[in-house]
Length: 404
Image (cartoon, rainbow, N blue to C red; front, side, top):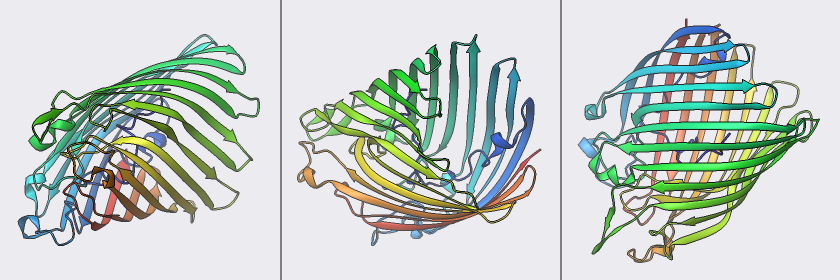
């Protein structure tokens, strides 16, 4: 499948009001094959710095903290037709805040995938996503509602040349748009095309060579002193994909290599170097399992001033299956973000910050189809020179989901 773009990569740093209450955890995997099942969920959370305001900054509306409630309902489909498989989720949700009532919103999440096979040599995937949610306030100051609409389409096809060799090609279109006027400059469309030659050993390990091009376009030009900035970019990548079954309990997965990015708003207009992500999983016999990751990659930033950062980060996590019905998950993440120098910023070379986050999450499978989740999340950022200062935030959440 196409390598995931920075636009939609999953990250614990993207914490915002409403983001906790997406598809009920495990709902799709809980649904038996050949099924169409409704689900519903309720949630409550309290955030002591909802809008991620800097230490010492005047509080919006004479307050920083807020509690919010979410209700959601939807359908899950998982169906096999001969060798074809169709999986889909449709969800609508409503989030209401106690203090910042102007942030109340109705969101949705529509996802559909078709895993197709033709004979024994050809297979692939078609995917569609359409989601609407409240965007995070990490990188700009406002107490106004900022809804983000994301639409993504993916097509992927593979040709098995030999039992151990496969040729694959894919295309992806990802669009993000924002309701708030100050954020409209981050409205963007990314189109990606990639090809891969993949080798898979009899033991299950795999190694692939991936060539990829991403073209990003920003329809709204970002204003600057005496001019406007073009955030359009082209990024070319040559990377190795690895899925190494090192032992029966250890797996290493990664997609990393070389990337060159040409973007007028970045200093000389081009930057290049190592780019990618590597994850390791250790699942020995027993109730404990572990995972760790590290990355160096470009990522979009929802800032009024810049469109992308170069991020270097690491994460670690542990899962404890305390019983057949109760699991405890803990994780920690550190990410250092560098805002590549741009001529219209004084001292631009020093533009960087770091975000740290940690979370503890308990999952109670009350009965088949009924799940209760409680979590605590802490997030902190060092100061940057882009109008955002040092902050920390603590979030407590509880949710319950039912798959009928």
